[in-house]
Length: 54
Image (cartoon, rainbow, N blue to C red; front, side):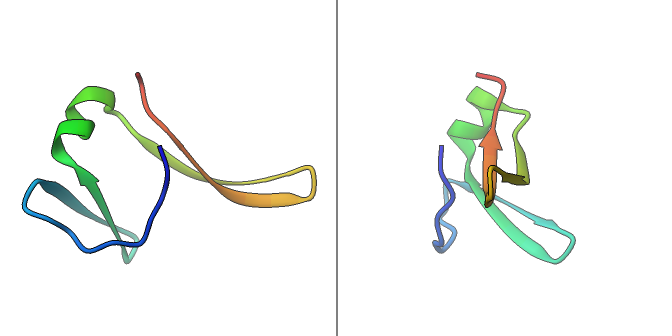
């Protein structure tokens, strides 16, 4: 999985979490829910980590 900047589509589920709009494909959500998005700092690098149950 990856994070991208994109507009929502008809087959997407839209969430707003603390003022940030998150969009995920409904089919993917059914397959790998629950999904977590974390911000990590490791080995001098930082970024978002997306993980699901699948």
